[in-house]
Image (tube, rainbow, N blue to C red; front, side, top):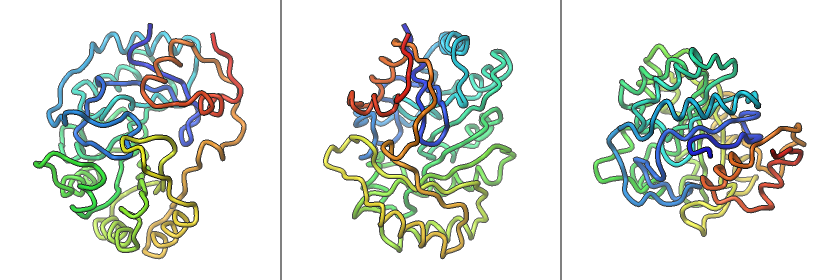
Length: 287
């Protein structure tokens, strides 16, 4: 039975992505209202080792015998940078397991303020850090942080990453929520920060809710409003701004194989409906 690995899924951004969960449910340093894993009952700020590293690697190796994903993606039940094994597991996937694909880290960006975390990114090919706002009041509405956590840590994290020797790709995600961080002022402030600090990135990706979050009454922002946000960011000097497609807009997927245990583990990570599973896996062979 798989405990740490799930999918692979035809990702909206990453092709065929094999999920790897480095933490236990739900270990996070924030409590985002849009989180598909549900609410964070107890915010965790301290990094630790959550799981047996060899167990994780054995599961990955087992899956790679049958499936060749485009990406191994650190995501799942919480914030992957909280794991002290982040760097060691990334290195082992590339060097010990001889994985020829790419490794992706999806992060809420908070721990990028820790320079030790930055050092552990060496074997990661792609980082998708979140930058929803630089305003403390909006930050608190969206992520409901611990009282010791400030949006300035997000700012510091992007500067740390920019000043580091990290050689991989950076796709900055802005998760837009209606009437919370969708103002022109918020987008202009984000653009001014990225420009003034000369922050390196390869893409800016605009995203919104695609399934039920921690707060169930949140609604996806309209395409017209996302298009408006894209225009504001571009007019204020940002480049390669793209809108992430919803699942319903995805093209027909190639046929892939998926292990039923991996699929069951994936369903435990997110609130998937059967209709959505059928949409994700348009052509799938389950074994």
